[in-house]
Length: 299
Image (tube, rainbow, N blue to C red; front, top):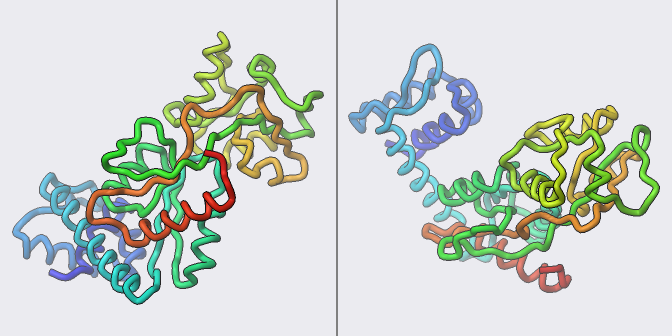
């Protein structure tokens, strides 16, 4: 057994496709399949359900996959720890961010990149539940997510402030006379919304229901760029974070504040506490804390 076989196994889980897993690992598909069969022979277990395509992992495969992730995380942690002992941070910092976060993650990425030129960055748009799950499985080093119901025994958190909301609209199709808009006025508009179940959508639904309002969305999607396309086409308006920068993303877009509008829970930077700890995550978390304290960001 070698570490590459474990990387092949994890890549197959993340892509759910033999060809894509092989491309990610920079090998041919026959090579990847042969090495995985070699791992199965060595362990005496059937790990992958195959036909003409990938169909999933066997129960035994799921258990071995969990060990593979732990071993790969330990290897990555070993190299990162050695570099840290030399006063360096190297490798890839994996950061999960909830959709429509009211905090620009590039503030942190830019800080880390300036201080540690050898670092690379991987950003993933994920739900709050997915971020916690991937932190638990060592698939992320840090997360930017909502702090509601966060288990403080297993995660450290750094509040990034309240996410205030505004209405993003295209001035070519919609115009509002005041400096802000009320929820009551917003409920009469064709609205584009993220899919139900996402925290940002839940905050919008709560604000509307608490005022006795129940508008039917004109457009629902799990992708922010689809909302932006709908807004630019004049199909809808959409509630967005005020500090997202989306109001400056195009000349014809405007982000108008909504009266008394913020998400149900504050946003925060999250670090897993359980061993094995991410050296990169730990170091960057500490630097983020120092930066946020220095600029007196809201808590």
